[in-house]
Length: 101
Ligand SMILES: *[C@@H]1O[C@H](CO)[C@@H](O)[C@H](O)[C@H]1NC(C)=O
Image (cartoon, rainbow, N blue to C red; front, side):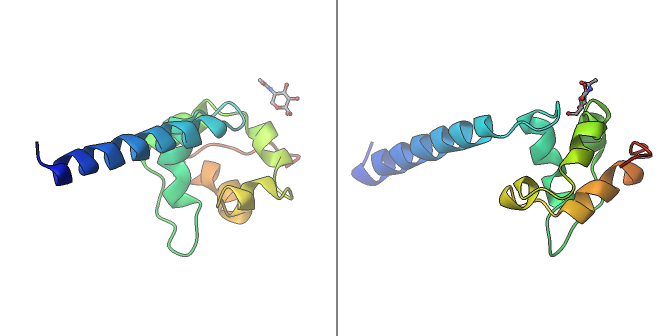
């Protein structure tokens, strides 16, 4: 292997390591990293997309009451999530938000 290839492999290993480390930190209302990642394009500005089946599946297993409690919290924005989009997401998956949300 040439020097450039070795460097590339090292950089890739570090990147993967950081991604694993970073995603371990996010777990929200019974949604795992995978679910959060699947939903992220749907809850981030400026170009939110319709939720994917994977995202809806993850949302089905999420605690929506808990999600509700984050409506006015700074936690969602700090994760890059738009709270308004997040609150509207269950409806797009034909799920009901708790009535007292
Ligand atoms: C959902 O979250 C709420 C608020 O955090 C909590 O009180 C409730 O027990 C949770 N429900 C389930 C099914 O985990």
